[in-house]
Length: 234
Length: 305
Image 1: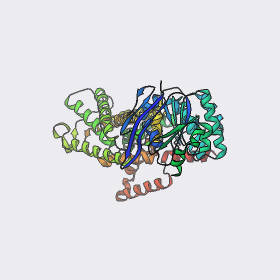
Image 2 (image 1 turned 90 degrees about the horizontal axis):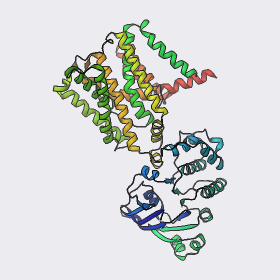
Image 3 (image 1 turned 180 degrees about the vertical axis):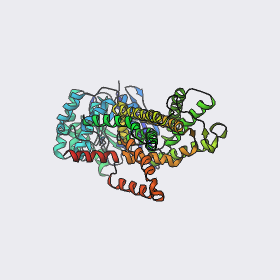
Image 4 (image 1 turned 90 degrees about the vertical axis):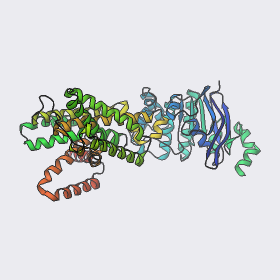
């Protein structure tokens, strides 16, 4: 069954169409990269899938269930986890408390061992009991992403995970995402502007342009596509 | 450990206070306890969840008038009336809260203020039931608690119960979710929290506590008057929470002691008392913006070093 189906999404802000007939299917586990020029509708698409924005028309289905108009918390309980472009963590909670909250909010038991193991994988174990506000931006980004994995998502949405992360941490992040995928393959969708990062990570790239899917294919095919080059340069 | 011992010692001292305290001091302590109960409710909303309600004391009024009506007009027993009035205030909080919570930040504040004024208007003008501006007289104290000393022990126990409720909530899953909502509501929702539900629940709980405090207050004063539930009183409640230390367990107690006790004791300074009180508020805001509880915590830490 199709894990995530997006059909004819439209979303207008005043006279501007952020999404304009956006449709695609994600059939099974995989790491998918969403790229496209600024204003292509990437974040709006993620907001619609996660329930933060309701579309003017169109449909979203998770595992065949129509979920358009569901509130974010209901979607979270259906297995959709997300990170935010602007990076969101609970600043007063410690790193561990942030991670526990990812389980607790779903009504699940906190998984102490798993939280500590994942913190270690991204090199934040020394900060486990420090408030998240004491972390650097890049570290906060890692913490936010670790939190999404503790939700054990069916569909994971990462909005520009590499933004504001220095090259050393970026390597940690790449290895971490690949390891998480290896351990529990599910649908990972990543919005990215860092081409090197996403081309090395994603098996499939979906290019958005003016609110719709322009092209879809493996990284080599996308990099060679004249329409993609045109959209970026034109 | 030491904190637990200090708390136990303070509680023991408070229970023994009638042996040494003058009736006047006891009177002030009773009022402090009765102001602390609604403040605990508001602390859960404002301090822990970040919901600044400017109509909080109107829910104390709902509790007070419900109990007054039940006890005097319907002849319901004291404890049953107290329980029903608490539930009524909580129910009103759930309904009115769910409306107010459609708004955010300062819009939320304005809507709560408007509801507070509306409820005050009802108390002030619905002569048949509330006896209007003259007040609702003849509200009894519970059997066995009529003398000041025994009523003091009742008020103290009720306040401690409110603090125990607060302590339990803050340590629970419910409390962790409230604090998360204050920090980042969008993130909490993305993690699976039904924010509207939890905020309505804490509004209802806070209102129920206010209602219980309101019942005890009018039973202490023996009259329910609209003047006890004005906008000024709601703003006082906000100040009690903020000055005491929003989001700290002991905050409402310290705030209530300062707000009720100090103006009473400054009466010797006659017309200067409000000036002195105002100056003190400014100083606290300047030098202890996180409230008295945090200030005491800092001093204790420095002492230990």
